[in-house]
Image 1 (cartoon, rainbow, N blue to C red):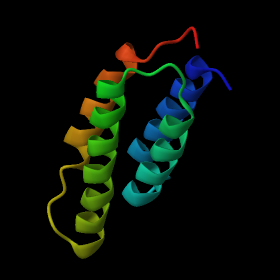
Image 2 (image 1 turned 30 degrees about the vertical axis):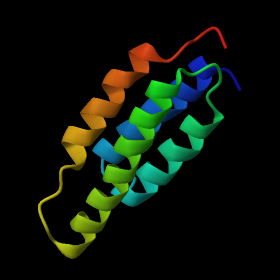
Image 3 (image 1 turned 90 degrees about the horizontal axis):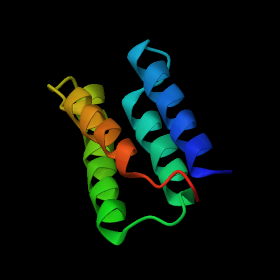
Length: 89
């Protein structure tokens, strides 16, 4: 699967989360799986995405426990990284 296809899939997953059809922790898992399949990624971008996805997973636990979550902020940061993903790989 191409990077462009993977990014499209990640965007669909984020849309599903926003519409209430995908819980935060499941979103984090799906985004993590897709990001692991990305090719020709700069090392710095890989590490940034991994850190954001870890924080998103933890935010999902906050959601489940009834605490205020930073999930929406983290998702916006993850989406901003999509522009940096090489689409020709």
